[in-house]
Image 1 (cartoon, one colour):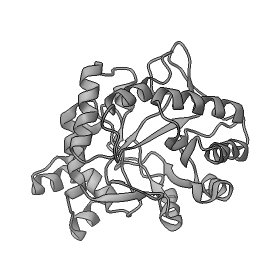
Image 2 (cartoon, helix red, strand yellow):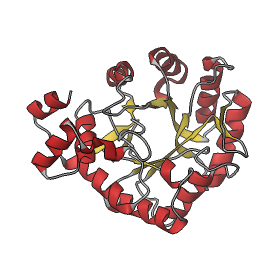
Image 3 (cartoon, rainbow, N blue to C red):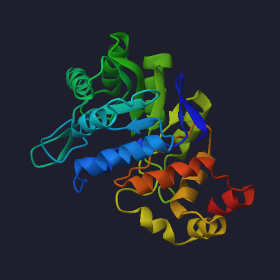
Image 4 (tube, helix red, strand yellow):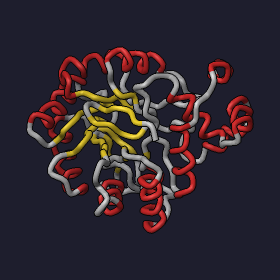
Length: 278
């Protein structure tokens, strides 16, 4: 698999979004671990999770799952996690961007992952109740304290990316926003990441949990048929062609689907095909 860069770390051009392995409808643990192992076998070296990837009150489920799956296989794997989202006992999502909460969340993630420092720690989503600069200042403090090696932000707009870069400097290495064939509103953020040399990690690049099959019609399906591959592979290859800073993180709950997604890193689309896909 071709490689790309997050900060100073080389990773495979396709990552694994761990969310489907931990939220509602998740597979049993045995299949979940087989899915992570299939990703590694396919050359995936970036695994993205979050403390809030859980069903209700089992915060940290995704991180603990990743730690178990990587036992004995941690070489050359960058584990990225996130803090700033909350889940209550009923499974409702909330936000807490306070510095005190982010520090507490980071400590819990360190314990769940069983590491001394988190490879890539990302603020999950801006909290309108807390000034963004305060939240990002706490993220920078975690880097300075040695608890986090690299910092990232998620669900950020152009102004927030610039503000985070000003506060974190070179410690800020990535932006994770929603981006997919049918969700392209982060084009401005992608262009800014390209300009600043920040990795852009599209979440739900195939449309979200249960929606990858929607790519089975239309232009992506037609291009896929010409290449003898899945429309999902074409969608990821199209995304990779947008910029060398793009590293999609498709979610998967089965070994077969992540292996198929990983193959997109070796699929080259022609200029005419890219123009056709938009």
